[in-house]
Length: 84
Image 1 (cartoon, rainbow, N blue to C red):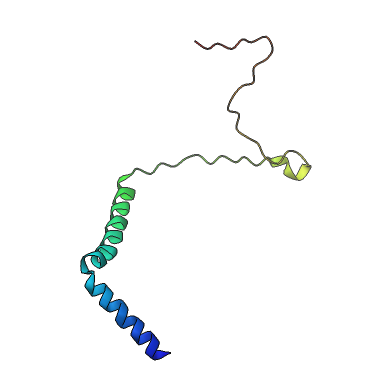
Image 2: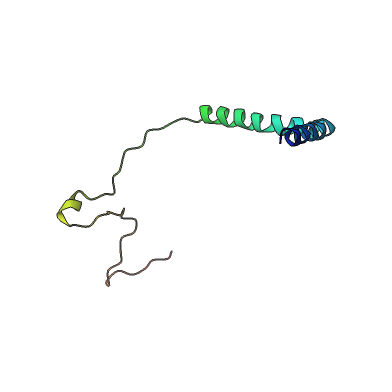
């Protein structure tokens, strides 16, 4: 088993040396991207958003379990849709 591992490691080393430019890119490009993302992350302002809980306090009383935010008011029968 040790001979097999030694042969594989030798083969990988030869392939790595043969394609030195690509091998260096495999190491340097991810490192560069990580540092670029860290730089972007530090440049962006962080804002604290208010915590909104969508869980109803009446869960234990058998009430509805989730409160969904009200996005659109439903139209009543006497309202007309205005497109323009």
